[in-house]
Image (cartoon, protein in one colour):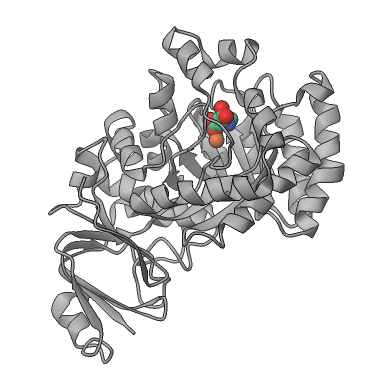
Length: 418
Ligand code: NIG
Ligand code: FE
């Protein structure tokens, strides 16, 4: 049965071009006041002014829901590490005592300290834990999330993580797109020999993940002490030959060359971008690579420096926003916090931040033609908020203002008033 969501004070559609938004287009929200959205069979049948939508042939018999708030496309969280077995509370304590990312790594914390429990965890428990986390994403208005492996760093454990994403997708309505991040760090078995480990990933893990269609994307952490720009380009090119779309963690801790290496390999997105300079920004623009900013991780690490969103937008690079939800540097699944951080610390406007969290997030996952905007024929992924003005989503922070989440036309979360 069709559903008519009506009484919407403000609807942001982000309808328009079938491409990632760049420059001034990031500020075009497609705002409709006193709006309605009609959904049928998991797809948006009509969206726009209330009176116009009410005239649609399906509207009369539709189930009517008065929502009385703000409606957006469901958030597309295009960068998460949502599969992990245990929180990293020791890292947290060290950080509160003043230790840096690199100091925590040197003391045996960081990414590598997540691998023991992940390797031991049975697939079923891993999938159950991920599905429980997915419910929290949905509660906060996220309807699609990318999920990375990268805490196993062996063939068996990396594939287990990806299989857990597949298994969890049967337990939750959250749509999850899997990414192979076996090149996240060099596991202890390789005694710091990054090239040897990467050869193993390329020869063994990558082909297997591709053959079993366990991942859509391949990602690599390009940073001093992890993988070099040269390794990044050749690894991502190998991934591409196997049908995996390249992504890169780049310029998070220093200006090291990962952004240009990713752009050279045709990366869909280059993520973090905290330390990008003009040359990197030009490379992103020329390659059509999206810059995915993760300011909640900067916040959580207590960093003074945030990614230069204004420069990226001014230079015409499409910008996306994501949580980077992970057990070390960003245990936050709420895209609403990311909006607030982007506005307050990266000088993004609320319009740009909302565009980055929806339509551009969808393009960062290659699904902008079906998700991330509200228009007839698009997937009916919607998030409703207890607000009178969309700017309140960026203005209030630390709370969850989402009251209703709709995934593929089905109500999947309802009633939160916090
Ligand atoms: O995006 N930079 C590398 N990866 C993650 C950190 C993951 C972790 O610390 O477990 C990131 O911040
Ligand atoms: Fe990350």
